Amino acid sequence: MANPFSLDFLNLRTEAFGLDLSDLSLKIIKFEKKRNFFSLASFGEAEIPAGVILEGKIKNEDSLAKIIKKAFLGVKGEKIRTKYAIISLPEEETFLQVIQVPKMNEEELKKAVRFEAENYIPLPLNEAYFDFQVVPPFVDHLDHLDILVAALPKKVVDPYVSAIKKAELIPLILEIESLAIARAVVKNGVSPFPILLIDLGATRTSFIIFSGYSLRFTSSIPVSSTKFTEAIAKNLNIGLEEAEKLKVEYGLAEREQKEGKEVFEALIPALTDLMEQLKAHLRYYQTHSLHEHLANGRGVEKIILCGGGANLKGLDSFISRELKLPAEIGNPWINILGERPKEVPRLPYQESMGYTTALGLALRGTRE
Image 1 (tube, rainbow, N blue to C red):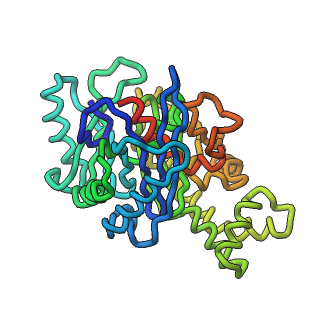
Image 2 (cartoon, rainbow, N blue to C red):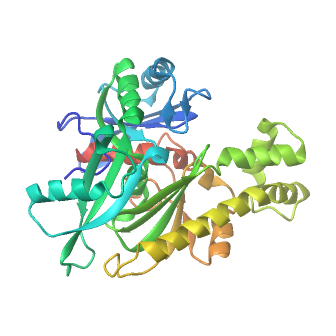
Image 3 (tube, helix red, strand yellow):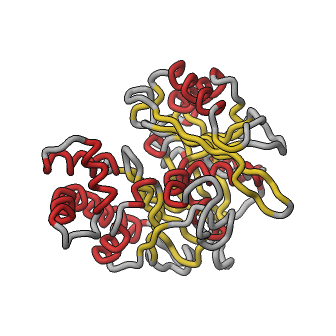
């Protein structure tokens, strides 16, 4: 069964590249096979003007297609010769749920899951693209099946397909962003206990809970790296460019210096909002989603930060103190290059944090 949410428009074993689309930027990653491992062959990024994509919905297909085409032709490293792309779909519009059904054969399962999913997906299934996968149990003593179901509205997905085709590319697979993130940062794609992935992006933050072999919960909030910069600019009465420089230089870790303290104090309201929403989502998951075989029934035991905003100095320590859980910066190369490398050829390691989703998409391409 294909991973949700993935529309396998073509079921071919062919080279493909990862294309991560968000409201304000796109990123491209292409791997090259070298004997028994993969190396980075091509990468690139481009800004997307505000309003072309808004809260995950494409508002201007033609503009987006031109940006994609230009970025595709202008990648660093090797020229990309394949037209096949694996594209991210917006987390904000995704409906994802783990449900349970009795054990049954595959044909019966398709009907049962679709019938059961109608109780969870808040729109008619004929207006959505729908997919599911059986989640392998971490301890196999079950009298039922856990099923991860996902759906996105057709009116959201179709413009992505159209824009990719207008860019003269072929959409091989469309995949929910959180699946790509988990594939990139969860070592070997399995965890014996629930872990919380926090993807801190430019316009929003995603909370992703992964346990055993699968996603269990996802949610997005509008707290973002850009909001942090805006808060610094407003409180210190400076421009956004200068505020971004101060954020990068001081973060949350340099409070013994005057400017560092000012930056931290400016960020307190946004950080408070982030932590309150994070705690609320954790409470919801741990009171509604746990049962005996979700990785031994344990609650979240570790936090992994990813996305470009994860580079904020001291953020991992701050979250760890607030939640009393170990928090660490994720390694988006862990399933590609192994343990944390000292450097990544061509792409600086810290910069690669912003490519986490694109890396996960490209890694999917190596497995197809």
